[in-house]
Image (cartoon, rainbow over all chains, first blue to last red; front, side):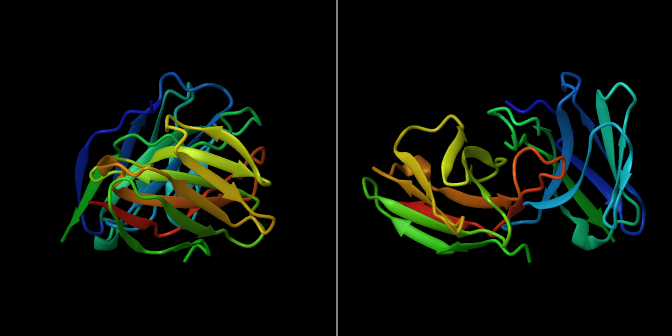
Length: 114
Length: 115
């Protein structure tokens, strides 16, 4: 089962920031938070990941709370092409047998509206 | 474009048949993971191959099997197809398992329909 919970859907106005929350209260110290998105009928696309520090790349920013129990993905200026299902995933990268397995939940369907 | 290619893109089979799906990983990647995505659901992890060895398996029966070749390309085989096997099958490649930058890059998937 997924170790993360997300709201099933969200709307955002085009040009505004989209803030997608994720709860991962049982995350362990060896689990990174990864975000992927999936545009209809395509393979999931990597967005960003982090362990405990905030991260930013050309696509988005990731804000992780100090206790690591939740995080927020921020798309600073949402466009219609950002309409997709967004998945927040806790993934082990410690070399154990569960390393590298993405356990997807239901994700958040983000609808960007004109 | 992720550099991960899957073939075929679509496939129709009948119940009881066998199917082989193929995945070509991104250059420099030695790990391949397979996922099954039923309509309206998130992808479900099937198994992962690291340097030609199976390295972890999800909750799928033994009739789901795989191979990874020396060039790190991979196959997913499903025997005795059932109607519930109808899904999008996704392959993802990555550089390795212990690197902090273990990012999986997905192909576009193979849509399997079992009639």
